[in-house]
Image (cartoon, rainbow, N blue to C red; front, top):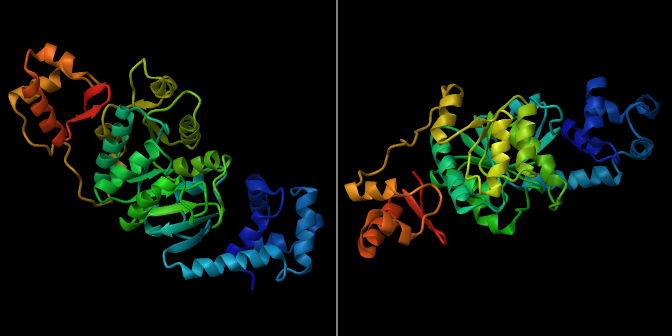
Length: 371
């Protein structure tokens, strides 16, 4: 018997159908099963000739058609994976917010915990090659937001995405990675360990692409609508003016979701995308607490122990002086010695203490504040 999820997949994989035509059909006819068994003449106003031809061939021997056999093998694979799930659009587990976007995926493949899809989500996106400050901002914002009840949603890419997932994992919180591949693949390969940690913490890897799908450039802009579509808001940490992150942010605006952006140095090219978003109406945020304050009402029902923003040890007067002479962009040690009129040994020891307290970080260009 042809199941609803199987019918959706057969219909989706007919040549030249596409997501827009799929939803035109769903709006016109009762179900995917109904469409597959309709006389092709009734579908000609929506389907292209190549699609109609392929459907005609399928209708002649539906059980023996290569598409049907391909999906049967896919179902066998899913059944063998204890942590894999197939969630169709009308499944109660399908994310409610995602249903509201203009072209939602008809179904989702989920590896991990499907229950986390129903929790309040905050998307964090940005450059694949962030500055040290941007990378740390993503980590720290994700830590705080995850600790205060948000599931962090991102794309498992290099750079800001990976830092966002890592921040959530570091406080044993749930995070969702939306893939541009099948759920049986991790891209980039260097994030395999991170993907394992995401699953171990009760998070999920999700995709609209079937198992076995390889990474292709066109898949990543397509998956961005899912990242923003599942989330209450999207935070852009660092991004160039022409970037996938800005596309995601604009999708969020089109979906009537909140968009947040972290400002940066006027000399940093990766801050320009955030500055442009702020000019266009995105909310400027200086701390993760700003986001919690704006979206906090959405978390009232979601009970999770939060991480206090001030849960740090007291600091000495000299440590405070060092922090006051340091900005959030790197400052080299010679300049700090000059500003503080101190010796290198005292300053070096103090900087180590501040790094252990996660108040300061070091890059090749110097030291900068985290808090």
